[in-house]
Amino acid sequence: MILTHIGLVIAIIGIFLMFRGGMMDMLLLVMACTLLGGSAAAQLPALGGSSVPPAPFALVFALARMTLPNSQRWREARGAIRANAWLAIYALYGVLAATMAPSFFRDSIQVTAMRATGPTRTLFDTVPLAPSPQNVTVTVYLLGTVCAGIVAYLAMQEEGAGRRFVKMGVIMAWIHATLGVLAAVLKGTPFDLLVDVLRNANYTQTDQTAYGMVRLTGIFTEPSAYVGFAFGWFVFLLECWLRDILPRRTGPAALALALVLFFSTSSTAYLGLGGYGIIVGLRLLLAPQHLDVRKGLTLAGAALALLIAVCALAFLWPAFIDLMSTILRRATIDKQDSESGIQRAFWARIGIDAFFASYGIGIGPGSFRSSSFVTAMLGSTGLIGSLAFLAHLARAFRPLRISTYCGPRLGRQFGENTMIGAAGGWAALCVLIPAAVVSPTCDPGGDFAVFAAISLALRSLPLPRAAAVAQRPSVATCRRPVPAHSG
Image 1 (cartoon, one colour):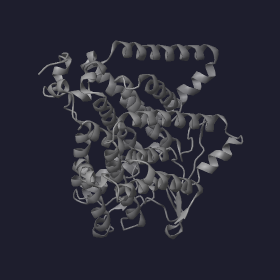
Image 2 (cartoon, one colour):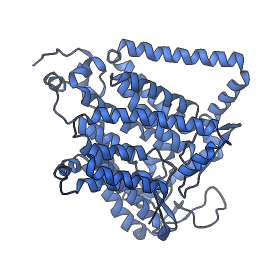
Image 3 (tube, helix red, strand yellow):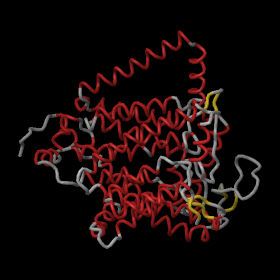
Image 4 (cartoon, one colour):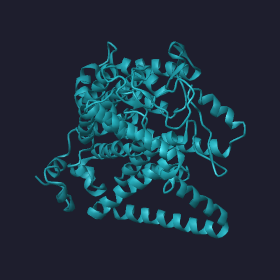
């Protein structure tokens, strides 16, 4: 393994925090490294020059922090493992399937290889199912996702960890949005040198344009990866703002990410925004009393301002409006008939075929390339793995808890930690929306694991007395204010 300049910096900071920092400091280092989506911390010449991303590399130091002789977190790791038990079962079953299923079901189905070993003739080239190095690669990422959840759960046990995580999210949102805009606006200037220094991984780095406009990629490998990362943090920060968690910071940061997503020209971003918009609309329709009046007025004002801006642009610059309408139409309505859309649909169907060809067992993570997390999960881990993942998602999201849906008025009785945890639950659920149409594997990713762990950890802390009473009724009773001293 050969460290890159980025890996060397991470190693120095990681070793320092191992002895001088706590688990929350280690988690913040890992989350900061997720901003480097197109970077490599190390190169592995023995594996064909494969790259080790910065976040998993930093995660190694976080795990090492747990094992230090003077660490008090090792005993608490059992609780973190129990909290992430269903996710661990999902990953371990994936390891078992990746080890045995490709050999057991060899040649029984044609699949699209995760990594092509020769020239491709068409968009629909397939190969017979067989074991491959990608089975190992994807299972390692799966285990890393579980470790990220364990580290995040442990970090949330520290005093004030929830608020520190929100503040870190705000900083990351501004950095991510700024890098995306600068990389696009300053394309062809010396700023490209900085981008090239940071995008040092052995991935296919794409610099795409759409109708003469440079698409937003920042320092990520492609637009879909860039907006996928932005979308998860957008949901988390907006949910925090709706619950009055540092509203003067989370609100503007969420707005910045929303603008980046809107102007990204990515179908992944529009699908995510549309899906989340429907979810928020249903929540407001079924329980409008949970939205603070000021929040409602702010959202309405933002929508009105956007409408006025669009009308002004239509009057002052008609060509721009025509361009944006064309991009939106091509990225949404016409997407399914495009070459890329047809290819993605073909890849997604392979997961369904693999599920039935393996009799619901799964042919193992890394055995085929998909274009949907859902079909990748079904085809790779079968019925057992899919049920385990859904159990973890339900446990983190807690759909029957009042705190999942309530706004700032009732949220004050539950406490800040519970509200941050609820925001994490919504983020964990919503990051799966873009993943459902772009993810090539069954790995939900470290962001999902961290957001889910935030919910699991912070919502398991002791509640105020009034909040404990409020949790007993069904969600429908949330329409009536809970007395401050009921009991």
